[in-house]
Amino acid sequence: MPIRRRSSFVFLEKGHIDVIDGAFVLVDKNGVRMQIPVGSLACLMLEPGTRLSHAAATLAATTGTLIVWVGEAGVRLYSAGQPGGARSDRLLWQAANLLDEKARLNVVRRMYEIRFGEPAPLKRSVRQLQGIEGARVREMYKQFAKRYRVEWKGRRYDPKDWGKGDVANRCLSAATSCLYGVTEAAILAAGYAPAIGFIHTGKPRSFVYDIADLFKFETVVPLAFEIASKHPSDPAGQVRRACRDSFRKSRVLDKLIPTIEDVLKAGGLEMPKPGADQIGPAIATPETTGDDGHRH
Image (cartoon, rainbow, N blue to C red; front, side, top):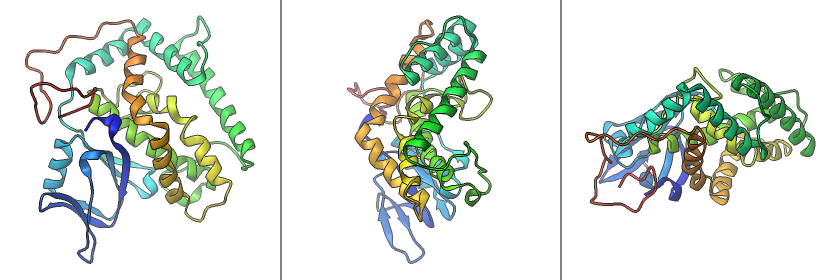
Protein backbone atom coordinates (compact mmCIF):
# COMPACT_ATOMS: atom_id res chain seq x y z
CA MET A 1 0.00 0.00 0.00
CA PRO A 2 1.49 3.41 -0.93
CA ILE A 3 2.43 5.72 1.93
CA ARG A 4 -0.22 8.29 1.03
CA ARG A 5 -3.02 5.74 1.60
CA ARG A 6 -1.77 4.40 4.95
CA SER A 7 -2.79 5.27 8.47
CA SER A 8 -0.11 7.32 10.16
CA PHE A 9 1.12 5.44 13.25
CA VAL A 10 0.35 3.14 16.15
CA PHE A 11 2.07 3.15 19.56
CA LEU A 12 2.64 -0.27 21.13
CA GLU A 13 3.70 -1.00 24.71
CA LYS A 14 3.91 -3.79 27.26
CA GLY A 15 3.75 -6.87 25.08
CA HIS A 16 5.53 -9.28 22.75
CA ILE A 17 5.26 -8.45 19.03
CA ASP A 18 5.30 -11.50 16.79
CA VAL A 19 3.83 -13.12 13.70
CA ILE A 20 1.32 -15.83 14.67
CA ASP A 21 -0.78 -17.73 12.13
CA GLY A 22 0.43 -15.29 9.50
CA ALA A 23 -0.81 -12.23 11.41
CA PHE A 24 1.27 -9.44 12.95
CA VAL A 25 0.17 -9.42 16.60
CA LEU A 26 0.86 -7.89 20.00
CA VAL A 27 0.56 -10.47 22.78
CA ASP A 28 0.13 -9.14 26.33
CA LYS A 29 1.20 -10.83 29.56
CA ASN A 30 -2.10 -12.71 29.73
CA GLY A 31 -1.62 -14.18 26.27
CA VAL A 32 -4.28 -11.99 24.68
CA ARG A 33 -3.55 -11.28 21.02
CA MET A 34 -4.24 -8.00 19.27
CA GLN A 35 -3.79 -8.03 15.50
CA ILE A 36 -1.97 -5.05 14.00
CA PRO A 37 -2.60 -4.21 10.30
CA VAL A 38 1.10 -3.65 9.72
CA GLY A 39 0.91 -3.24 5.94
CA SER A 40 -1.53 -0.34 6.17
CA LEU A 41 0.55 1.69 8.67
CA ALA A 42 3.32 4.18 7.96
CA CYS A 43 5.15 3.40 11.19
CA LEU A 44 5.01 1.55 14.49
CA MET A 45 6.24 3.29 17.65
CA LEU A 46 7.54 0.78 20.20
CA GLU A 47 7.56 2.07 23.76
CA PRO A 48 9.34 0.56 26.80
CA GLY A 49 7.98 -2.87 27.72
CA THR A 50 7.87 -4.28 24.18
CA ARG A 51 9.79 -7.18 22.62
CA LEU A 52 10.01 -7.73 18.87
CA SER A 53 10.56 -11.09 17.18
CA HIS A 54 12.69 -11.59 14.09
CA ALA A 55 9.61 -12.69 12.13
CA ALA A 56 7.77 -9.49 13.03
CA ALA A 57 10.72 -7.30 12.01
CA THR A 58 10.96 -9.17 8.70
CA LEU A 59 7.25 -8.73 7.96
CA ALA A 60 7.38 -5.01 8.78
CA ALA A 61 10.37 -4.54 6.46
CA THR A 62 8.67 -6.49 3.67
CA THR A 63 5.53 -4.35 3.88
CA GLY A 64 7.56 -1.12 4.08
CA THR A 65 6.44 -0.18 7.58
CA LEU A 66 8.97 1.75 9.67
CA ILE A 67 9.65 0.49 13.19
CA VAL A 68 10.81 3.12 15.68
CA TRP A 69 11.96 2.35 19.23
CA VAL A 70 11.05 5.31 21.43
CA GLY A 71 11.17 6.29 25.08
CA GLU A 72 8.31 7.21 27.38
CA ALA A 73 5.63 9.21 25.55
CA GLY A 74 7.64 8.88 22.36
CA VAL A 75 9.90 11.84 23.11
CA ARG A 76 13.24 10.05 22.76
CA LEU A 77 14.38 8.01 19.78
CA TYR A 78 16.55 4.98 20.53
CA SER A 79 16.67 3.27 17.16
CA ALA A 80 14.79 2.87 13.92
CA GLY A 81 14.59 0.26 11.21
CA GLN A 82 14.66 0.98 7.49
CA PRO A 83 12.11 -0.54 5.12
CA GLY A 84 13.81 -2.32 2.21
CA GLY A 85 14.16 -1.10 -1.35
CA ALA A 86 15.68 2.38 -0.81
CA ARG A 87 16.72 3.97 -4.10
CA SER A 88 20.33 5.12 -4.48
CA ASP A 89 19.47 7.67 -7.19
CA ARG A 90 17.32 9.71 -4.80
CA LEU A 91 19.90 9.45 -2.04
CA LEU A 92 22.63 10.72 -4.39
CA TRP A 93 20.37 13.56 -5.55
CA GLN A 94 19.74 14.60 -1.96
CA ALA A 95 23.46 14.53 -1.13
CA ALA A 96 24.39 16.45 -4.29
CA ASN A 97 21.97 19.24 -3.37
CA LEU A 98 23.55 19.53 0.06
CA LEU A 99 27.16 19.53 -1.19
CA ASP A 100 26.52 22.19 -3.85
CA GLU A 101 26.46 25.55 -2.04
CA LYS A 102 24.10 27.24 -4.50
CA ALA A 103 21.75 24.27 -4.65
CA ARG A 104 21.59 24.02 -0.86
CA LEU A 105 20.68 27.70 -0.58
CA ASN A 106 17.95 27.24 -3.18
CA VAL A 107 16.53 24.29 -1.24
CA VAL A 108 16.58 26.25 2.04
CA ARG A 109 14.88 29.22 0.36
CA ARG A 110 12.14 26.94 -0.97
CA MET A 111 11.63 25.46 2.51
CA TYR A 112 11.34 28.98 3.91
CA GLU A 113 8.75 29.89 1.26
CA ILE A 114 6.63 26.80 1.99
CA ARG A 115 6.83 27.29 5.73
CA PHE A 116 6.01 31.01 5.91
CA GLY A 117 4.03 31.50 2.70
CA GLU A 118 6.35 34.16 1.30
CA PRO A 119 9.71 34.27 -0.51
CA ALA A 120 12.84 34.25 1.63
CA PRO A 121 14.70 37.59 1.93
CA LEU A 122 17.18 38.14 -0.89
CA LYS A 123 20.95 38.03 -0.47
CA ARG A 124 20.86 35.95 2.70
CA SER A 125 23.09 32.96 3.45
CA VAL A 126 21.83 29.67 4.85
CA ARG A 127 23.08 30.70 8.28
CA GLN A 128 21.28 34.05 8.09
CA LEU A 129 18.05 32.37 7.00
CA GLN A 130 18.38 30.00 9.96
CA GLY A 131 18.53 32.99 12.29
CA ILE A 132 15.50 34.65 10.69
CA GLU A 133 13.57 31.39 10.82
CA GLY A 134 14.41 30.83 14.49
CA ALA A 135 13.16 34.28 15.46
CA ARG A 136 9.91 33.82 13.54
CA VAL A 137 9.32 30.38 15.06
CA ARG A 138 9.77 31.70 18.59
CA GLU A 139 7.23 34.43 17.84
CA MET A 140 4.79 31.89 16.41
CA TYR A 141 4.98 29.84 19.62
CA LYS A 142 4.16 32.99 21.59
CA GLN A 143 1.19 33.77 19.37
CA PHE A 144 -0.26 30.27 19.72
CA ALA A 145 0.19 30.42 23.50
CA LYS A 146 -1.62 33.75 23.56
CA ARG A 147 -4.43 32.46 21.33
CA TYR A 148 -5.09 29.46 23.57
CA ARG A 149 -4.34 31.32 26.81
CA VAL A 150 -1.51 29.03 27.81
CA GLU A 151 1.33 30.20 30.02
CA TRP A 152 4.48 30.13 27.91
CA LYS A 153 8.10 30.47 28.99
CA GLY A 154 9.70 29.15 25.83
CA ARG A 155 10.36 25.79 24.21
CA ARG A 156 12.08 23.91 27.04
CA TYR A 157 12.10 20.21 27.74
CA ASP A 158 14.42 17.45 28.91
CA PRO A 159 13.92 14.18 26.98
CA LYS A 160 15.56 12.30 29.87
CA ASP A 161 12.98 13.59 32.35
CA TRP A 162 9.56 13.62 30.69
CA GLY A 163 7.65 14.82 33.74
CA LYS A 164 9.90 17.81 34.40
CA GLY A 165 8.50 20.04 31.65
CA ASP A 166 5.32 22.09 31.86
CA VAL A 167 2.12 20.83 30.25
CA ALA A 168 2.51 22.90 27.09
CA ASN A 169 6.01 21.60 26.44
CA ARG A 170 4.98 18.02 27.13
CA CYS A 171 2.09 18.33 24.70
CA LEU A 172 4.39 19.83 22.06
CA SER A 173 7.00 17.10 22.55
CA ALA A 174 4.44 14.33 22.20
CA ALA A 175 2.89 15.96 19.14
CA THR A 176 6.15 16.60 17.30
CA SER A 177 7.34 13.04 18.00
CA CYS A 178 4.25 11.76 16.15
CA LEU A 179 4.96 14.05 13.22
CA TYR A 180 8.64 13.08 13.15
CA GLY A 181 7.71 9.40 13.06
CA VAL A 182 5.47 9.61 10.00
CA THR A 183 7.89 12.02 8.29
CA GLU A 184 10.80 9.62 8.76
CA ALA A 185 8.68 6.77 7.42
CA ALA A 186 7.94 8.77 4.26
CA ILE A 187 11.59 9.81 3.81
CA LEU A 188 12.83 6.23 4.07
CA ALA A 189 10.04 4.82 1.92
CA ALA A 190 10.91 7.21 -0.91
CA GLY A 191 14.62 6.38 -0.73
CA TYR A 192 16.10 9.45 0.97
CA ALA A 193 18.38 9.68 4.03
CA PRO A 194 17.03 11.05 7.34
CA ALA A 195 20.50 12.33 8.33
CA ILE A 196 21.18 14.52 5.26
CA GLY A 197 19.53 17.79 6.23
CA PHE A 198 19.74 21.30 4.78
CA ILE A 199 18.70 23.55 7.66
CA HIS A 200 19.30 21.05 10.47
CA THR A 201 22.65 19.28 10.23
CA GLY A 202 24.78 16.85 12.20
CA LYS A 203 21.95 14.76 13.62
CA PRO A 204 20.59 11.33 12.65
CA ARG A 205 17.19 12.87 11.80
CA SER A 206 18.24 16.24 10.37
CA PHE A 207 16.20 15.89 7.17
CA VAL A 208 13.25 14.63 9.21
CA TYR A 209 13.27 17.89 11.17
CA ASP A 210 13.62 19.91 7.95
CA ILE A 211 10.57 18.34 6.32
CA ALA A 212 8.44 18.01 9.47
CA ASP A 213 8.93 21.72 10.20
CA LEU A 214 7.14 22.52 6.93
CA PHE A 215 3.97 20.99 8.39
CA LYS A 216 4.43 21.54 12.11
CA PHE A 217 2.61 24.84 12.56
CA GLU A 218 -0.38 23.89 10.45
CA THR A 219 -0.88 20.53 12.18
CA VAL A 220 0.60 19.57 15.55
CA VAL A 221 1.52 22.89 17.18
CA PRO A 222 -1.99 24.40 17.36
CA LEU A 223 -3.32 21.00 18.38
CA ALA A 224 -0.78 20.74 21.23
CA PHE A 225 -1.60 24.20 22.58
CA GLU A 226 -5.34 23.52 22.37
CA ILE A 227 -4.95 20.35 24.44
CA ALA A 228 -2.59 22.06 26.90
CA SER A 229 -5.20 24.78 27.49
CA LYS A 230 -7.57 22.11 28.83
CA HIS A 231 -5.11 20.94 31.54
CA PRO A 232 -5.23 17.26 30.48
CA SER A 233 -4.57 14.47 32.96
CA ASP A 234 -2.85 12.41 30.25
CA PRO A 235 -1.13 14.90 27.90
CA ALA A 236 0.76 12.34 25.81
CA GLY A 237 -2.20 10.04 25.28
CA GLN A 238 -4.62 12.80 24.34
CA VAL A 239 -2.09 14.40 21.99
CA ARG A 240 -1.39 11.11 20.20
CA ARG A 241 -5.04 10.42 19.55
CA ALA A 242 -5.58 13.97 18.37
CA CYS A 243 -2.54 13.78 16.07
CA ARG A 244 -3.79 10.54 14.55
CA ASP A 245 -7.13 12.17 13.73
CA SER A 246 -5.49 15.39 12.53
CA PHE A 247 -3.12 13.56 10.18
CA ARG A 248 -6.04 11.70 8.66
CA LYS A 249 -8.14 14.85 8.16
CA SER A 250 -5.27 16.97 6.81
CA ARG A 251 -4.05 14.05 4.64
CA VAL A 252 -0.49 14.85 5.64
CA LEU A 253 0.78 11.50 4.30
CA ASP A 254 -0.47 12.55 0.84
CA LYS A 255 1.73 15.63 1.00
CA LEU A 256 5.01 14.44 2.50
CA ILE A 257 6.72 12.73 -0.44
CA PRO A 258 5.60 15.31 -3.06
CA THR A 259 6.87 18.07 -0.75
CA ILE A 260 10.26 16.38 -0.41
CA GLU A 261 10.56 16.23 -4.20
CA ASP A 262 9.39 19.84 -4.48
CA VAL A 263 12.09 21.24 -2.18
CA LEU A 264 14.86 19.14 -3.72
CA LYS A 265 13.87 20.20 -7.25
CA ALA A 266 14.39 23.79 -6.12
CA GLY A 267 18.11 23.03 -5.90
CA GLY A 268 18.24 23.00 -9.68
CA LEU A 269 20.25 19.79 -10.00
CA GLU A 270 19.12 16.90 -12.17
CA MET A 271 18.38 13.63 -10.42
CA PRO A 272 20.92 10.87 -11.29
CA LYS A 273 19.53 8.07 -13.41
CA PRO A 274 18.95 4.74 -11.60
CA GLY A 275 21.82 2.29 -11.96
CA ALA A 276 21.32 -0.98 -13.80
CA ASP A 277 22.08 -2.95 -10.63
CA GLN A 278 19.77 -0.92 -8.37
CA ILE A 279 17.87 -2.92 -5.74
CA GLY A 280 14.17 -2.93 -6.48
CA PRO A 281 11.07 -3.26 -4.29
CA ALA A 282 10.92 -5.99 -1.65
CA ILE A 283 8.06 -7.64 -3.57
CA ALA A 284 8.50 -7.03 -7.28
CA THR A 285 5.69 -6.80 -9.82
CA PRO A 286 5.96 -6.24 -13.60
CA GLU A 287 4.67 -2.68 -13.29
CA THR A 288 3.10 -0.48 -10.63
CA THR A 289 0.68 2.40 -10.42
CA GLY A 290 1.84 3.42 -6.93
CA ASP A 291 3.61 6.64 -6.01
CA ASP A 292 7.13 7.01 -4.61
CA GLY A 293 7.48 4.80 -1.58
CA HIS A 294 5.02 2.23 -2.93
CA ARG A 295 6.85 -1.08 -2.47
CA HIS A 296 4.50 -3.56 -4.12
